[in-house]
Length: 362
Image (tube, rainbow, N blue to C red; front, top):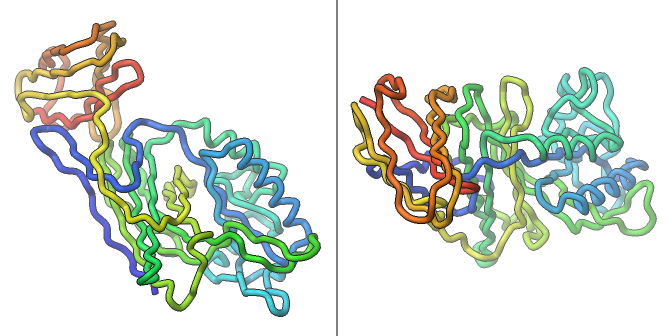
C-alpha cells in the first residue's frame, strides 16, 4: 500500500536568515542538471541487452549525475513474461509509451533522456543517442537541486521516502514532482541473451500522479520536503536491491529539469542542519533605508554581492574585490542601489563559497 503525499515548504525565517533541517543532504549551492533516463525495455526484446550495455557504459563514464528507471509497459508485445518468470509489466508506464510526444513510432530499447526531443518531433530516442544526450544534460546549469532518501524498516516492512527540492533560482513555469521505486537483481529469461539474465532498475511503484504532483512555489531559496510511505508486506520487493528516484518536470516544455536517485537504506534518516558556507548576518532586516551585511571569511577571496527579485531578474551586482581572512561589513543602501519595496534574494559569493538570504525592503 502506498501513501502519498505529505508536502511542506521547509523554510524558516529567523532574523532574515534561512534555516533548513535536511534529511537527504540536497545541495543549497547552484549545481548542474542530473541526467534522468526513463528506459523502455522488455524481456522479449532481442536488442535490449545491447541497450543495457550502453547504459552500463554510461554509468562507467558518469558514476554520478546519471539516474535511471526501466519501464516495462503492459501495452507492448515485448514485455509479457516467459513461463515461470516474474511479471515485470506495469500499467503506469504504458501512458508514457503511448503518449504523442514519443514520436511516430514505438520501439525497444528506447528511452527518454530528461524528456527532451533529441530528434525532431520525438522524445523517444534510440541507444545511439543516449551517451551524447546524457553528456549534454549534465553540463547544463540547473535552477534546482533534488535529494532523495529511502529508509526501509525490515521489521515493519515499511519503506519511507523523503524527497527534498531546493530552488537555487526563481522559476516562473509550473513544476511537477515524480517519485519512483525500482528494483535490480531480478533474474528472468531474456531474448537476445542466453541463460538467466539480470534485469536492473526495473520500475515497481510510483508515488506521485501519472503526470506528477504540482510543486506549490518555485522561488529561489525555497526548500520543499515531501514524504511517502509504502507497505512492502504484500509485494515483497527485495529492498536490498531497490532504489528510489525523484525528478522534477517543467510543465511548459514537458522536460525533466533535474532529479536524483539513491539506493534504499536500512539506516533511519537523520535530519541535520547543513553547514553554512559563509557566516553572514543582515541587520536590520526588514529595512527601509540601509542594512549592514556582516560576514566572516575563512580565506582570502574575491567577493561579490548580487540581488535578484522574485521573478529571478537580477537588480544589482556589486564587485567587492579581494578581501582578506576575517570579518567584513558592507552597508547596502536602498537609494544607491535603486531598490523598490519588496523581497529580494541576496547571494554573497566568496570564491567557491556562497550564502543566500532573503532581504525585505519596506
